[in-house]
Image 1 (cartoon, rainbow, N blue to C red):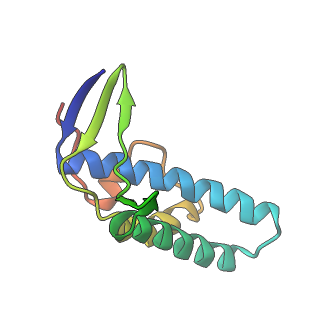
Image 2: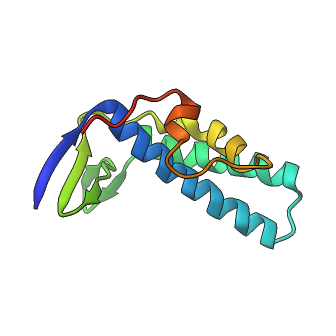
Length: 121
């Protein structure tokens, strides 16, 4: 497997898209459980933020060793990683707001809405 290091902008774009997908899942789950839209949006933002903080500043321990989560994105046999961890918590509430808009954005345009750079590969 080939490993490619993405620019910080490219890595954050992929992470933001991933986080947006999580927000959509949370929204569907809360709607299915009859949570009001206002309350559901607040819960979605808070959950995304907490999960993001775990990623950005936390980690896990296993058999005495400490590990930080360092996700990769696979594309056509290439493992794409970032040099630096993204600050995913910075996008949590923005993604929660976007997913609850009347006409939510289509996948692939979040980088424009959130002011992130363009893919340069």
